Length: 255
Image (cartoon, rainbow, N blue to C red):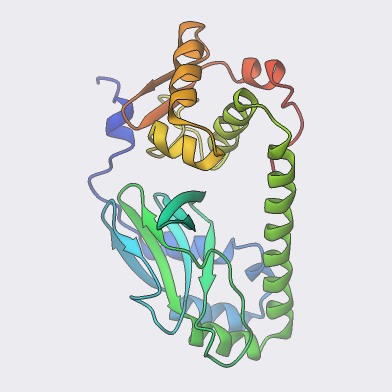
């Protein structure tokens, strides 16, 4: 059997989410592990499965009352507005990641994680439930609510620490940091262990690190000549992870 190409791996034709997959994603959310059995059952009943084609947007316009979502399969980009109607990629969400936004006019707890526009990167499957239904479950389970707020705080703290660290890095270090960080965001592919498992253009990489497209192209070309990375249209494979870690002093945790 011929070895699949990176393009074939990153472009699934279907993305089915079975009941078993749905349940496994829900029960493995860090904060849900603290839920009472009745809360767990309620969450599993309320979540719906949405198959999404590449490029489809998930925005507050579609869910005006707010939405809680979990990425079951595939990956999505989180876009953040900066200025002059420009958006940059703020993060990439992969299997097991979650997001939550709410209408400021709604009553109840307000938790805002990734309220910006998100768009699918590949054929994806999301588990979603209305924010109102989530709040109903939280209001009957204080431990679950506490755990959710704790996880949201942990995520924000981690993002802030990562941002502070990135400010001190050179352009080369930033790109090396990003490639290793993205590589750790999802499970490894058997055929290509160093392949970042979702589609990203050079423009996407530049957007995420605040460096120019020209710089990204120059660095990737230089690293490819040294056998460190390999890239094509919309994909990047890291061949030598140790090179990136040691050369750019990234041996510590990327979290």
